[in-house]
View 1 (spheres, rainbow, N blue to C red):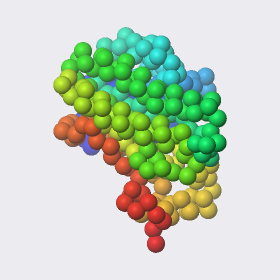
View 2 (tube, rainbow, N blue to C red; view 1 turned 90 degrees about the vertical axis):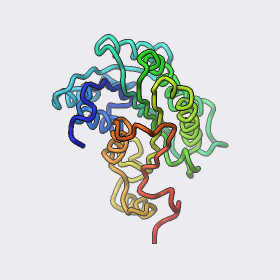
View 3 (spheres, rainbow, N blue to C red; view 1 turned 90 degrees about the horizontal axis):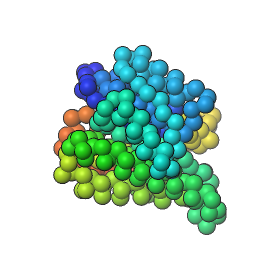
View 4 (tube, rainbow, N blue to C red; view 1 turned 180 degrees about the horizontal axis):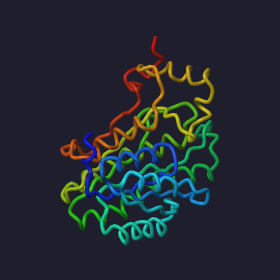
Length: 260
């Protein structure tokens, strides 16, 4: 990248307090975008720290507290970004939750509601609210975060896999509906990424080695691996791509089995 592909663009990244969301926010800023960062947790100072990191790259930023499962809060987030920046060119939906180890039969209704309301409904609400802005602009770019378990079921993924599969169809439907307005909508389907979000899966050398052994490339993803893919979709390098779901999983989808 030449550090100017997104010059003059305004981006909004949800779930930006840590992990993939933080990496995406910094990648976009590194290519010239001003970046608003949003998360449900703001009190610990980590979201504002990410905003500071964006500013340290020479870009403007705004930190916004939002529960994406609440329509009113999503509308307020959108309004806050518009009040500061005047437009939204790029939306990256990274916010999500999962409750590991539950099968669908075991999953309590409250856990199902939390996962579906945050991951699927929340992504929908953000796409809807910001999408309306982009329709008015006659331009925009939306990137949703699905998962490898949105493409194929995963042991213990439960409601999470359903929510991520729903995001894939939502992405395709929105791509069809919004193309007339010059808006592209795509999704990334990461494999296991080394973040706090799923640290119990890979914590410790033995666990990490075991999980990496299931990946043809022989390692787990770092947040920057996902951020670079998001940067591609956010830029004009992907100007003729919409409705796509790109696995960023080290080849997991190629075999779905441990490499030899």
